Amino acid sequence: MRNSTARRIVAKSKSAFRDALKYIPGGVNSPVRAFTSVGGNPLFVKKARGAELTDVDGNAYTDYCMSWGVHILGHNAANVNRAVRRDLENGSSYGAPTTLETELAKLITGAVPSIEKIRFVNSGTEAAMSAIRLARAFTKRNIILKFDGCYHGHADHLLVSGGSGLSDLPRSSSAGVPRDFVGLTLSVPFNSCRAVRDAFARNKGKIAAVIVEPVPANMGVVTPRDGFLEFLRRMTRSDGTLLIFDEVITGFRLGPAGAQGYYGITPDITCLGKIIGGGLPVGAFGAAGDIMEMLAPSGPVYQAGTLSGNPLAMSAGIAVLRSILKNDFYKTLNTSAGDFARELKAIARKNYLSFNSAGSMFSLFFSRDEVYDYAGLKKCDLKLFAAFHKNMLDEGIYLSPAQGEANFISAVHAPAILERTLRAFSRALSC
Ligand code: PLP
Image 1 (cartoon, helix red, strand yellow):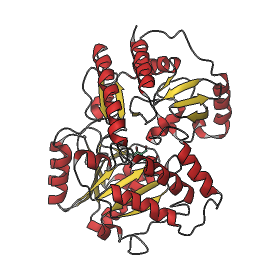
Image 2 (cartoon, helix red, strand yellow):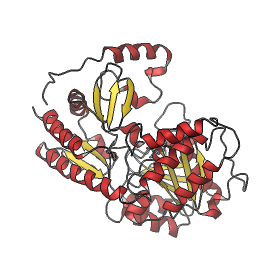
Image 3 (cartoon, protein in one colour):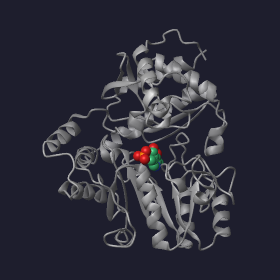
């Protein structure tokens, strides 16, 4: 890895971070933003437009974090801004229903066949947490099966690292979560049919739901092996368990019907977020009507939110979905991202690195071995990743600041931008 010679001046970001540290724990409102895993100082953002992010020191970067996958149309999309400005003129929150909620619900249910009814919340965390409560009520069972390295937000019972294989004594990944709270959560390696089969054999008739990111993007991008998602569908169906696809990242990313459309698997419950809020806080979960009607006020499962279905978030989401559900949006995006991924994979190979991609998401792993689960991610050389990340910043490329995070291509990452990025990758990796 070469030593960078072109470090950018980030004095204002440094000062902003010092100031933030005095008032905000760790200086940030979500941990990975602190650059802890890549070292150095987080860049404080002044503005962003299209594929470009500008920090408070005036440095411009081509962004591949894109607010962690939110901005499929690029930053600051004019049609989204127009819609939000227009609706802001009417007010920002009413605590009463608006037709915007129904409009976004119609767009989503029209695009994702497994979702007949949907409930909007404020974050992906809330979506996953509520989906699990619903699954437990529907099945009248308690146990949840998840996968090591998949992230479903920070609800207590989902902060479980299963360790190696199936664990009878699940450990929480966070302080402050009593063991009893995670005692009903099993975690097994992604892509391992055997581990799933064992978990079902040991807990027959007791597992309420299997929750999975169908294409995990929180251990870097990891793709499901042929037949794995089909296997999950069969196992869950045969044991009366609900299958929850957490599509907070993949929803409206891989295609109009997310990963479930991409792979042709129909889950029972789907969690959404990110793209459907167009940059405003949002989450959602949806399923067939009989499941969703168990929610209050129709049914006994309580779930609520002061700002749920917030008109500005709905408005931004409607504007985004109206753009991306048109014509050849995904064909164009996925073709251009696929070409980029092929070239990047060749660069990775030349440097003895591993590379995964799906649609417009990708991850470069500092490991020679293929990464297909959390144990594979753990083998990566994090020091090399950190040095590479710095080199890329010097090249003017902002990648997601952790080895275990995904990178995203938007519709405005034009071919010239992608070509420049490929050259930057080669330089940043060269000694
Ligand atoms: N589920 C997945 C797959 C995610 O990637 C995330 C966040 O990145 C969440 C849930 C939690 O969403 P939020 O950060 O909006 O709470």
